[in-house]
Structures are given as structure tokens and as C-alpha cells.
Length: 231
Image (cartoon, rainbow, N blue to C red):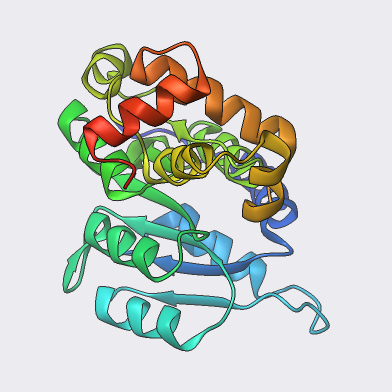
């Protein structure tokens, strides 16, 4: 079934996207080029030349990784499930190895709980279903979460089942924070080191405790060591 395109709504979402990423370096790796991601690119190219932000777009995993190796600083990375020479999940995994501060959003074509789990384990900070693009505000909510150092999973996924599957699995960001907790850092120190708000660090720590099934930071450090998250 074809849905009518509400261009006014799409433009409003583009304006919000421009606000959310205006101070960020952005890498879009998509294949085929999705409508909304293309619109993001076109709208971003209309920014004033004084903007310090860099925006790049490619369909190739190899080209995306080469660019990340050449550029300094962290990027917002948008990747689709399939790329011309690989998969977006692998791009994100390798990008996080290059710089854990990259904020990564993966667009999945298929609505499958295992793929969501694999995406989170690979390092995706946000996961959005392709058919949500242009039809819901999922991309906007995902970007808002990325800007706050939080994770996001599109409600369009069969998320209650996914939650059970990943309840004991930490995302790369949570692993990073758990390792700092194990080193004895406070929420404030974690926030300063990762360039996130103290409240965001606190929320991450609470989620880590919940996922590990423990009640204290010390217990989380011990459990992290037992599960191989900490060394």
C-alpha cells in the first residue's frame, strides 16, 4: 500500500534534523540512497559556509572507514543495513574501534529482534526501522537520544522480545562506562572524560546495574570482571 507523502511534515523533520546535527561532523553511509537520508544531505548542504561541520555521504563501507581514519574528531554516523561492499553493522563495529566517541545510527531493513540485538552489540547507539523513515518521528527521537549520550531503539521493532534478549548484554557505550566505574571514577568524572552530562552518566550507570542484576557500583565492577567486560 502506498502512503501519500506529506512534504510539509518531511520539511519540518528536516529542519529539526538540521538543528540536532548542526554542530556535528556527519557521515552518511547508505545503499540504496534512502529518501529521508538523501533529504538530510541536501538540506545540510544548504548550511552557511561558515559552518565548521563536515558532511560526507557514500554507499561504500570501505570509503566510509577510510574517511573516518583520515578525519579527526568524532562523527555522527548514519548507516543502512546493506552497503555496496558490506553491511552497516560491520561499519559501525569498526568505526567504534577507531573512536568509541562516534555516535552511530543503524537503519535496518528487516524487522527482526536478533538483528536489533546484533546491532546493539556491534556498537549501534540507535537503531531505526527503514519503513519508519519519512513516516514517523523515529529518526528525530534517535538523534535527540544521540545528542544526550543515550541509546534508542525504534518502537516499530518487536522491542519487548528484544528487551528480553539483550537485558544482560551491555552496549559498547555501557561497557566503556562500566570500565570507568571499575576504575573508581564518579559519575561527574565519567561525564567529563566522555564529554557527556553527569546526569547522563548517572542514567547509564543505573541501566548497567539493572542489566547486570546488581545493586552497587562495586558489585557491577566485580560482575563486569566475571563476564569479561573489565580487565
